[in-house]
Image 1 (cartoon, rainbow, N blue to C red):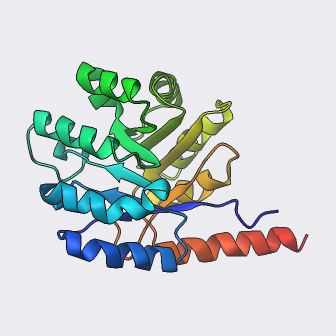
Image 2 (image 1 turned 180 degrees about the vertical axis):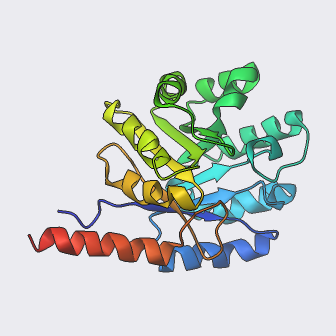
Image 3 (image 1 turned 90 degrees about the vertical axis):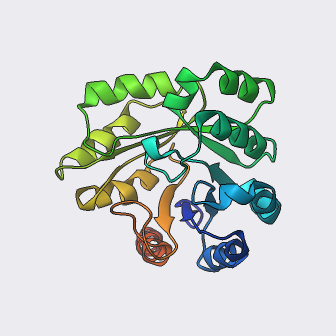
Length: 234
């Protein structure tokens, strides 16, 4: 009843496509349910090779090409980034992560994704703070106009910021929402968000964190196993 409830997506980043198969295998061995392939970590320079390598796991993968402005590593032009996103999209991964800011300012990508019926994860990241709940709710309502999958990430400056993010679930009906805060103060929300009915998964690292406060997959699975065992014993 509880064994498959807590899904975890492992973020994978590397400077070499040749290292990618080993990282994917390691993530799966450590019980990752999904993997996020961070194409912005230079492997976009070998995009065709990278897409071929990831083809076998695309049905359980999120493809991401994050710009530096959005906290990623891609440093090319916006036109190049949009072209790469379109190529990644046509591989048809489980989800293509695309920022709300990109969707809002680029009509071409909106049209392309809609016409080709590409499943997308609309994301936003605030690397400075966690806004008030009313502001977060307004942004959430805006984001879910574009997809049923929404990822909202902020930076926790206090322990209380966890509950602002988690409160979004109380105002959600059927949207697949992933909402948590980065930083040491936000670790609780990274764990607890996965306990909500409409949360499809949370994120973990393979070993070294790719974002502040990110836990590794082994530790996260141990925590969820303990929760499952406690629930089963009741």
